[in-house]
Image 1: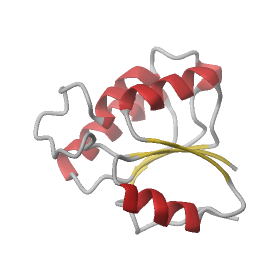
Image 2: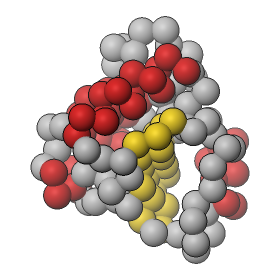
Image 3: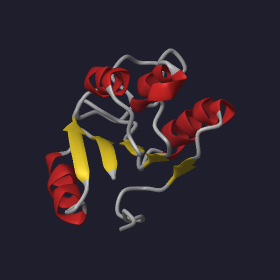
Image 4: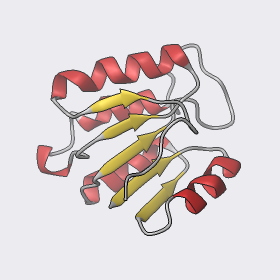
Length: 121
């Protein structure tokens, strides 16, 4: 499976590397990197965090959040959209907004905080 993993926490990247052996994972740390990657290729799964840049956001409309990635998906050609999205943020409100923004596109999306889900074989 081709996976895009967006998070700014190096510990989560290390844990996800161990948990994703056998999968082809692109690790990114910023919203811009995630958006650029989705413009270039299609992923089977995009695992997206909300809070980036080492900060916790109350306002998802700030520039460096996963919400910016969720907004950008609709500007990407549909044939590049991820086949499935997991929002793995612990920020409940930020994750809720991301899911609400993505659901109308018809992409299967769910909120599952990091560590509560596993990649299928």
